[in-house]
Length: 451
Image (cartoon, rainbow, N blue to C red; front, side, top):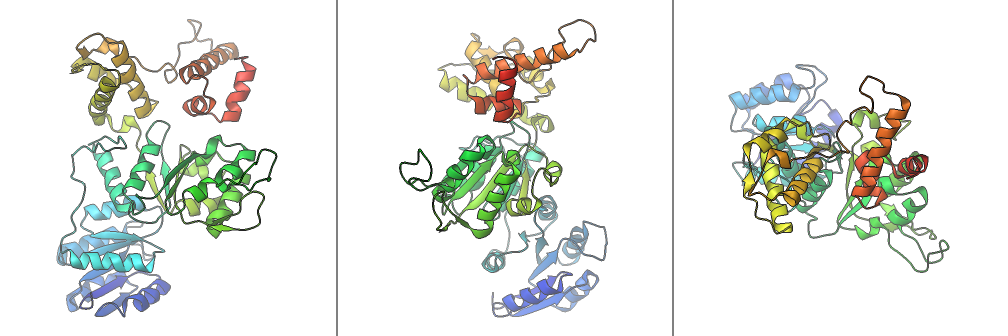
């Protein structure tokens, strides 16, 4: 590394100064430049080993994609130069695109100094940066993530890039897409994989339980507090904390969570002493990011805390080519679970699956295959064996005409709620999650329909 020459191109003068001070003792020469128009000329005159290149510049050449433009120019004329893209939080899609166009790596600002030095050292040690994901190769790991479509290739690529970092990650996606599996996969691929992985469905916690569950309490803090108890933050210390359904917590809960994340310490109920915690935070929600940006619903300062990077988990309708792979994966699983020996899925059944829109995503596909395996007496699954969840299907109106009266809509809702409650054997949290409701809303519906 002491023999390397590093060029840094960014329009942020403060960043250039800080990077030069950091790198000067570690490399042979540091060249900094704020104007990307001078980039190619500098490379012509200097034997640069690594280029740190910003993704966006104020002097708009291809607004939003300036970094990609200059990356292409560099790789065209100076293919031997390792290019590390500098990107802001949340711009992982652009960063991944840059990797596909020849960048060796990317780094998110603000970065840890040790992380930047480690990235440079790795590039210098390894003359070729090998992509750990083989395109088109399906991934089926212990978390059950399966797919070989282009959109899943992108997802796997992101997982391998962001998992080893310490970045807080917000996982976005519809219900049933497997956000919890993605969170587990990130932890397993991280440097904390030998440490605890603690999941909390914060969307189901009441106001009174929120603090005691997350932050813990001391003996005597409230009536039933008979002994000290650690909260989930302390249990996840040195590991990963996964907050599921974070988009459903109240503004009051958000304020309490933000305080802990800012201070990196919790104060248990009944105590005044702050306890430091070292966690890597993963969060998930089915609420679109644009909706979260509404400050009447979600604090923007909290979004910035939890969303250093974001991962969008695709809906199943956006990766239809993965349906046969997923269906056979679930078939193998339920063959073993129910001691069946169903050899495969017939073409007409696969066609039926691929023509369905799957509003319940992978979870609904899994349900359909499980039910088919249980009920089938044949050597293979046929189209008639495939039935879709009545919870997700759009019910027929009770009348033959177009009379969508209030009574009809209420009856439809009542039946959907009853079916969900029966399916989950009275588990309110699971039924509410399946229906896309909060626990409190579901309780009100149960009271309304006398269920």
